[in-house]
Length: 482
Image 1 (cartoon, one colour):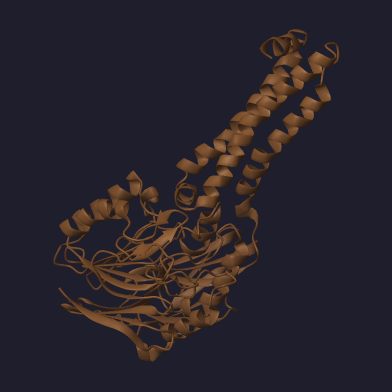
Image 2 (cartoon, rainbow, N blue to C red):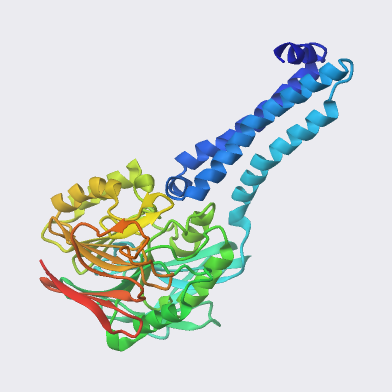
């Protein structure tokens, strides 16, 4: 076989040799690069490590990349054996072109995803890193338009809305910042003078007080999600009688982050409430699928504060510190930059005597079961990486989603809460017959087959936490003393 292939290339011109060898090598390298991409790019790395069918697809593609050169060699040997004077140019070119279609099509689709938009996105009122001169978190109004436009934004504590900002150029993504808001004040804002007038209220200036709602995993776009439950939870968030000052959504906002239509559905459903209740979402593994991070950042993480990270945040309310981390599948997305930022913020801007809360999509301790060969319970890498940080820095409470359950766990003085009940299909009970699973270490309460949210009400040295269903009934509650 080696002799036949050598004879084939000996008879070719220099240009033909370069063409054949280059095309075969390019096809091989591009195809095999998909494996490299799968094990290095944070969002895809998690898919590759946790989802069995993704691993199978990547391995099949890479196997095809190895097979093409072999097939090319077989074609050459067969043609040379039958008729040495006739070269299989056409057959080889068809093979090479076909071998290029897979990686080029894959990368072409991946890189084109951010351009595939499904329409205008309504405004969101977002909590940002840092606070203004009065101690109220900086806030922004962010929205996206399919056509590039230039807008005027006005806001103020009266309907005259005397503070005005106009965009200097036409653009698709629009974000307007409100810097020095006063506490316990109702503000009004408007996008263009003919637009709808929105209003929101800032938090009272009461040290160590903060009442907020958190929930996770609505999975907008999923056919098996329960939108009725999601809408009822949003109604509870909006109800003034409940007194929620902010809402933290802990990831997996959409089912497929590469489909902007899912983000469109999410924005349309959330905005009637989150345009006037200060809001901050964490990014989840479904949200970043392929090019989904671009959508998420455009709609929910405006790049408007210098030197502030976009995908993780430190928000302070009345001396209470809330850290929202970018942890999608686990530690794959916890790079050196985020690590250094988190540890520096804890060291320089908090005190162990402060209330310190950490939020992320991925869980740490949790009950769960085996899925595609992966253990969806106590996440050992997350625990080993973060528990020493939590314990050493006096972290009081940790909140996450990822698993679609209600669960409270306590380990080494840290309270862990999983609240994946915002509408995504609930997980099965880990102890059901035929399921391989186990209870999370330190589990104090575990509930599945339920939708809902977690209410957190910090008043001085006591935090009252209540897992509630969409009808606002308490499923489980407890207190934490500082």
